[in-house]
Amino acid sequence: MRGLRRARVDEVQPARATVRPSRFRALAVVTALLLVLSACSSTVAGRAVIDTSGGATPLTPVTSAVEPAPVPAGLEQLYGQQLQWGSCSDFATTDQQSRYYRSGALQCARLTVPLSYDEPAGPTITLAVVRAPATDSTARIGSLMFNPGGPGASGVDIVAQLVAFGVTSVKDLNRSFDLVGFDPRGVGASDPAIRCRTDAERDADRATTLRSRTPEEIAAANAFAQEFAQGCASLSSSGSVTGDQFLPEVGTVNVARDLDVLRAAVGDQRLNYVGFSYGTAIGTQYAAQFPANVRAMILDGAVDPNADAVGDSLGQAEGFQKAFDAFATWCAQRPDCVLGSDPAQSTAVFQQLVRPLLDTPAKLSDGRVLTFDDATTGVAAALYSEALWPSLASALLDLSRGKGDALMALADSYDGRDASGKYVGTLDAFAVIRCADSGDTADSFDEADAQKIAAAAPFFDSGDPVVVGDDPCKYLPPSESKLAPLGDLTGLPTTVVISTTGDPATPYESGVDLAKALDSRLVTVNGNSHTAFLNTGNSCVDQLGTRYLVSLQLPGPDTTC
Image (cartoon, rainbow, N blue to C red; front, side):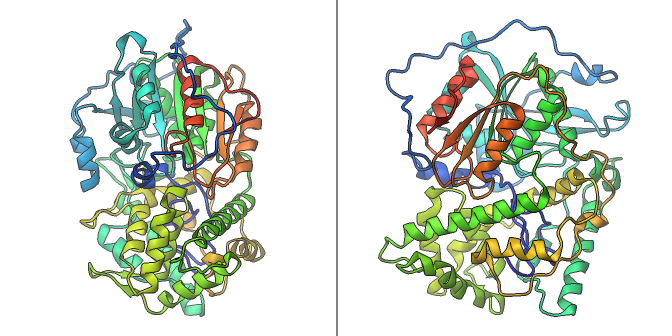
C-alpha cells in the first residue's frame, strides 16, 4: 500500500500508480471467472442458511402488459434501430476471447449511440453487443442484460464465458431470456475504445516499480501521470471522433443512457439487468434516470452511490486486509504454507517474501520479471474468491523457492494479458471512466487520508513513504457526464441487492447502504468472495436470483445464504 503503486482494476488509479496509496474499488468479475468456475463444482463462497434446492417446481415466467417506454426527444431513430446479428469473431482481441467467441450459441451486433446526448444528431459511436438467444421460445420473457464491472470490463466477455461454463442457473435463465452482454462506451470491442498505453508500453511499465523515497522519484511518478493521460487522449480516437472529444463522454451517466437505447433496440419494453461490482453503479444510474423502465434488476457487489472517496477507499482497503487474513488463517492449516502456522505473523512474513522484489525482480521463464507490484497484484487477484486460495498458496510457495511464474500468471489474468502479450484495455478504461465520473481534477485525499488508507491494508505495504501526488484526471479533458446524486425513483419496482460478508473489493456495508437507497431487498451471502450470483457455485443465491428474474418472486426480508 505504501509509496508508488500501479493500479489494479479495483483501484482508483491509472495502469501505473501515481504517488499516492492504492485506492481499492470494484474489480471486474470476468477477470477471474474461468478459474473460479473450474474450481467451484460445490459451494465455495457461502454457507446456506436457508434451503431453496429441495422439491423445486418449474419456474413460471412472468411477463406483464405495459405501455411502451417513452423515447427521449431526438433519439427516435436510434431507439428504433434494428440490430444486425452475426458472427462474434471480429470482437475478439485476445487468443482466449477467440476461443469463446466462435461459439455457435452466440450472435453479435453493433449498437449505434450518440457521442453526446446533448447533441443527439451529432457524431455517433458504436457499442459491441452479444446475445445467446433464449432456448425455449414458448417461455421467453425478453432479454437479460449483464455487466461484469470494472469499470472497463467486457460484457461481451462475461456472457460468452457464462454460456461456455455457466452453472445450472445460467441454463435456467437462458431458457426464458436472451442473455445479452454489451461493452460500454470505450470498453472492449466498442468503437472508439479507450487505450492509454500500447502492449509493449504496458509490459515495460510492469517491469519497473515507481517509488517515493526521493524528490526525483516523486517527480518521475508525477510525470508518468501526465504521460499516461496524454496517451489516453492520443490512442482513444476512431474515425472523425478524437480522443479529446470522446474521453469526456465515457462516464457512467451516459452508459446508463446507452443501456436504455439497447433495451429498446432488442425489443424490450422493460429492462432486465444483472450488474456485478461497478456494474451495480450502471444499474443504479439506470434506475435513477429510467425508474419506470425496469422490470427486474440484481445488483451484486455494490458500489455505494453515496459514499465519499476517502471512506470508500478505506473500506475497501480494510476489506482486502480482511480477505488476506482469512486466506492466511486457511493457509496456516496446510503443512506447506509459506506464511507459516501463525496467522498473526502472516503479514510480516508476506512482506519479507515480496519486498526484496522492489530492488531485485524475479526472473521468469518467458524472459519477463516479477516486480513487487505484479506480485501483490497476483495476490489481490486470488483474494477475490476462496476458490483461488489453493492456487495462491502454491504460487507463494513457488516464489519462496525463487519461481515467480505462477504468481505472474495470476497478475496477468488480473491485468488482462494473454500468453501472446496482448492486453485488453480494462485498466486504461478504468482510469478514464473514473475521471469522467468524478467530473473534476481536485484530489479529495490529503496526506492524513493516505496514511490512514495505507495503514488499513498493511500486507500491501512496500515500506516506502506515503506521498499524495498528481492525479491523471488533472491532465484529461474535463468530463461532460459527472455522476449525480440519486433523485426521484418513482416507478422503480423492488429490486434485489446481493452483498457478501467477506467481499474484499466492495464491502458488505456498501450493499446494505445501496439496498436502503433503492428500497431493494437485500440478500446477504456469508463468504469470502467478490460477488456471489452465478460465479461461486452457491446454489442458494443462484436459485433465489433466478426465481426473482424469471418469476418476479422476491427473496424474503433479511434473507441469508
